[in-house]
Image (cartoon, rainbow, N blue to C red; front, side, top):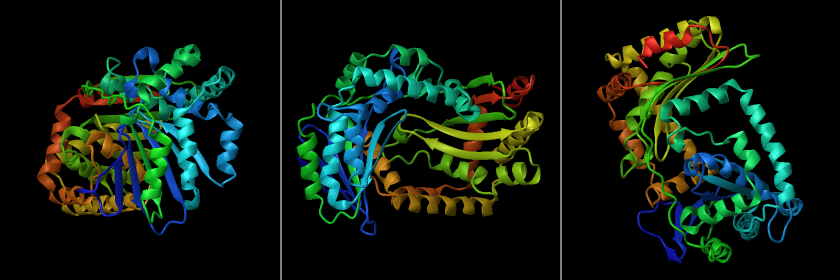
Amino acid sequence: MTPNHSTLPADSYLATLDNGLRAVGIAMPWRRTVSLSVFVRTGSLHESPRLNGISHVVEHMAFKGTATRDCQRINLDAERLGAEVNAYTDKDHTAFHLEGLPQDLPEFVAMLADIVLNGSFPAEELERERQVIEHEFTEFEDDPAGMAFQLFDRACYGLSHPAGQPVIGKRANLRRFGREDLLDYVRRQYTARNVVVAVAGPIADFEPFRRAVEAAFGAMPAGEPNLVSAPDWLGGLKQRRMAGCSQCQMVLGFAAPALADQADGLASAPHVLAAALLGEGMSSPLLDEIRERRGLAYYLACTADIYPLMGQFVIEAATAPAQAEEFLQAVAQLLREHAEGAIDPVGLERARKQLLVRTLRAQEQPARRLEAAAQDLFVFGRLREPGPWLERLQQVGAEEVGAVFRSMLQGPPAIALAGSVPARLRERAEALFKC
């Protein structure tokens, strides 16, 4: 076990086990509970088309039994301590969580280790869980917003790279996966150099947590880092008409820098500031003009989504089919205005302050801190302070923000239309955004 003391944030602890697993502690002395997470660097980005969706199935099945506990015992063991247990699968990682009282932390570490390391994936439970995930597929396929984002990822990256695949996977794969498929995937992907065990809460002493992690995970095989090449941005337009929908769901986006594009992770700052300027808050140009003044959309948002291997500048909206074309025209006009130099200094300062508050609030939220710590370790091999990010945001001026809009309009956009899509909307979108 190697403690890592250099260049750590003041409230953080880090130690590396001999097998390469990292243990992280984040001190939040004002909290009365602890949040514990195990992050595994595996998700839909690590799946071949034939295995698309297997990370999600493994996450579901991890709670269905281990070598010593069945699913009922797993739930009872957590709940008898008042703990909340949960998990999720994303493109680049899978995460398992427990939240409860500080005095129960060593037991929580052992519980999550049992789930992550000793899943037995009982065949009879797999058959039952297939039905649960089938319902999840149905809910997903009935949701125009979810469908639009699935189409959007496909428009961004195609299907030649796993970035274009949905996290939930494919129905055909779900019906085909067997117990041995899950066990084989876990053996290959769930290795110590791809795992971060992190806790946030009133940690007075990191050493007991470090010892608990070493006892629970110290024998985990080291393995090799689960590394994936970054996808190329393709762009284009995808659409899906869905019966029974009364609204048109639209997602429009452009390429943005990935978290890994610079050693310090600051390359995306101009895009993040541009997104906040354009569409964060009711006084932003996007929401003020399109929603408040013209009533062209009920739901409207603009974000710069920065992932380890890719970035997306995203505008999403739900609008009436009859207003969809006018909505796209209004968005195109706002993008052109910002590209041509109409960067409002008041709006720019408003966006900076909103990002400052968002960053500081994230420092106070255990779930956000834990996920950020895991991503820092997976991408950079270290924990980062928020200071350099906030300093970079202060340095981004109107010219850099304008350059973001100009570069986006010069590259191919990705557009997804789902729900009640008017007959000629695709042609109009392609003409407006030259995709």
